[in-house]
Length: 369
Image (cartoon, rainbow, N blue to C red; front, side, top):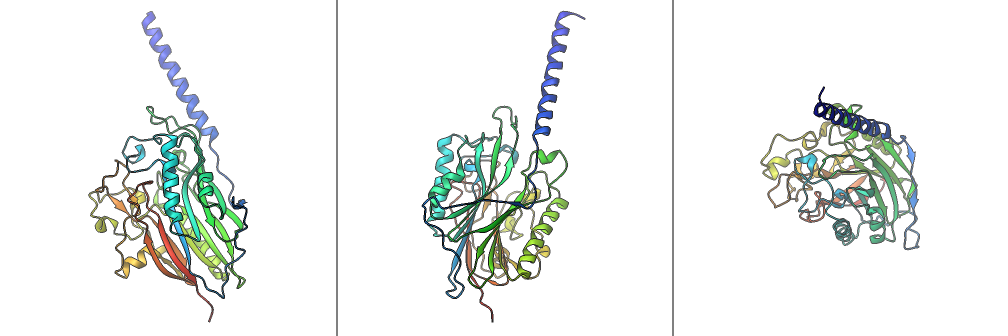
């Protein structure tokens, strides 16, 4: 064997060893948090305790907002490699901070009672290690807050030109009222290799005391997208709906809100005249028949009533946004029959800070009798 061939063979063997060690590192680093994990309530930064309970006798109008922040990277200029683009990390820490603050301030201007945030990075290569949860807490200094981790990845070396890196992220719930006994539920996910590309999917449950002895139960949801087959998605829905049904049966008021990673009106392609009709699993119509009795999907109900003229809540991130990208309604609320939905609409920020627009719902708790 000549010298050149030996050198080439040595290089190949070294490369194979490096790849094998890296794959072992990723697999050994992988873990899932326990199901039914108690969460901590962080007191308001402003020092003033939140209102202790909702006064049912006053029957106030309340407002809940959901917003997927896209880890502070997905402004109009950003595209993402897993959607067909080339972007992997945010442009800079300054851009991340500007995007989080921009969306946070826009939501604050709505004067929400509750906010459900998804894709909130607290320590990530992709977001230049900006702690977005703390940025949001400064914007809402008088809210009680709860953070639920759903992503803690080992260092992902892909794409090679700009590795996605190691990232810790989750969902954050903000409330003007006191929060009791917050809980993290671990959703079913794939057991295949795709689990290394997906999040440690979960939803959080936050309980808001009501003066009638019941609770307003807020569920912050981010269902699977990448790598999930229909059986996994169906299992996730069954688990979420079982918890929602149990809470309603106990007499509580229930709202699940967030990014459902499905078309939540079922016909977004028609409504927004999308160019591509053959969509990924996360853009397929939601299984509305699986929604249990006593619950309503806000966006679908509005569409079925002939009242839907909202902006989309999610845009195609395979290329930067120019107003012509394919769009869908993927973010909404599912609420129980003892809640009156007064209004629900997309907050049209034109995807200035994220690939998702927020959604707001104004509601009241229905009194008995």
